[in-house]
Length: 233
Image 1 (cartoon, rainbow, N blue to C red):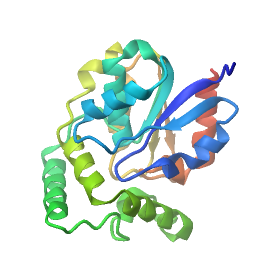
Image 2 (image 1 turned 180 degrees about the vertical axis):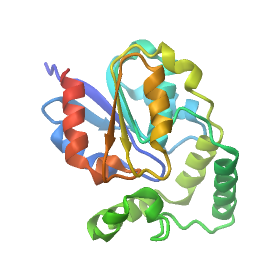
Image 3 (image 1 turned 60 degrees about the vertical axis):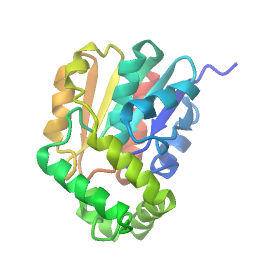
């Protein structure tokens, strides 16, 4: 009988299991990791329901960016099933008017056949400037997006656009919560994550230096050791 904790990993927009590959390897002795499918539906609560349908009775869950929105919805739908929660580079707020406008435009372009995935021009939004020179990293990010493609992009952007405000529910979260943010995250600023930290009683917030929006890829060792302590604690 394995006494290791089941750990569900939820990727962000246009990301798949490669987002978590360092963590999966590093957490082998702490958890039974599986990467949830977040590509099939175009709303967050349907994605959460489908993840719950195939999840073990109880589990730990960690989500990055869009994966965090899904993780918050999972704990709202089934709080008794979540043993530990990890929220990385994510927000409990709905989109601002400006974000909505940008997302709506990208969605319209994609539906008109102009899906570009993650282009080199987009990379500075996603990772710390110093990581732009890391060819392996940038290739990995662009390849994930290409692999997932236009239909998944349309589903996920639609889901993100329509997500609700999770802030009113944060105070009800009772399990141990690990929060990780990047000090140079251009998409999810630190204060947005600090707000989550202030609302959840049992949460620990770590800001990673030299890190943008994709902490699991940019600072894998640091994320791995924080996750080990979180699972082990």
